[in-house]
Length: 466
Image (cartoon, rainbow, N blue to C red; front, side):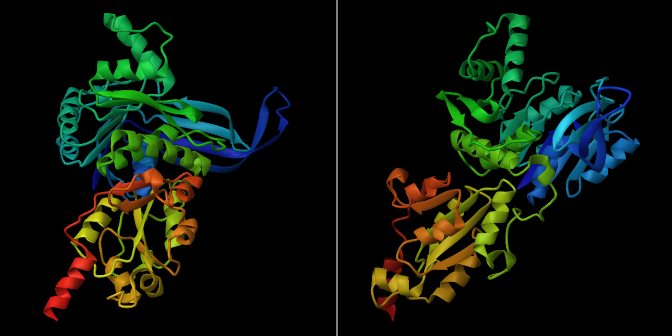
């Protein structure tokens, strides 16, 4: 899946250390520097997050040919850069931190703003995208008329998430989801009221803000983020609702909005509904902060780019470790289970649908002894080693774990997936595993069952020709 991130980039610098004394000539803390870290900021941070997860990412932006710009370019790593010329100094934002908390931030090159020219390659990258994230940091790029026209056309055919900025341009019509924070939403509505009397008393609730801004911008949805509370979602033709966030201890909220926009785009591109995608994105952003936020970027090898190259490949070796690594980077682990005796098209369709719900799919497979207890002494038709290898050969499956029990609860307790998938006409809340999965914050999902294709039917057909 080709992901295109569009927006302004800047260089973020963190100077970390400890402070144990005050300066003798002024009442300010002295920070003994222990480390200096540089990373891509703005749209570059969104692109870096996605690339760090192993995705195919292009970044459409403008850069300056100065020392900070060259440093920024080197920080982008695996991101495919499609850049024009900025014509302005590279913005640099430097945080000085003691014991992990900011003491002061100073900005360089952030004053002047200019609408840059765009190149044909930049426009082509937008046209070729399978999903788009616009990360506007108010530097002028999203005000370019050619770029806006390309984004509006693209938004009519692919999911486009727009993370706005108070000093940036308004989203183009037709965007899938716009993600302002609460202060930004209030500012955007006040600006709209000042321009044409659109609305705005200054005391609107988050739900009202989301609804009015969605109407104003002509987007499919607006998700107003509310920090530790969660977010408020307004969708065209549907009542709005609050998306709750899990409680996490946060020392540095930097990057939460970028993480939310990135993961929201991924879930929408995989076919998730807006409400489910918003809930997953809010949870992913909270998990990202809970793990340490931007400090964790680049500390793991890419893994979410799918898939292991051959049956029994390295990604299939340890399903529990795979699940932990995916979740450690904010990814979504999907699990499903069954006997999978005589793999058929119905199985393949169900597994392919399940895989689209997250970043990796792990299959919990009944052992031979378990199948015999459930289905009788003549089953399984294929032994567990063959069934496991066939499942691992499917592009939708990342790993298989065999369990000996009659039910998968013990296996699930080890994997702790974010989503447990069953095929059929069940009510997710009535599944026997529902309470267990929900105990760690997961959920159950039902995917379509294909009744014309079954192992039992295939077995009967084979008996007739044998």
